[in-house]
Length: 95
Image (tube, rainbow, N blue to C red; front, side):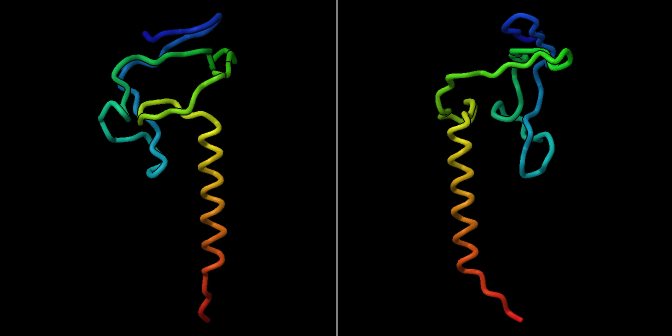
């Protein structure tokens, strides 16, 4: 069993859960502890019973195994938009 935090929370995910790999659009096959849980999950709700919570006041993560906050995701989105706009400026169409 995992660690359940909060009223009506339920932790059912055991160790060994693989993280989602965006490059393959599937669970990661990397077995390092960065990609595969070595201990059971921590839960702050119970999705099966429609109990969900936000985790608030989270500082930006530093290490590969730290959580990411929304501010960090917004920076990534801004960077992607800038790269896309720059690429459009330098695109040549050859007929």
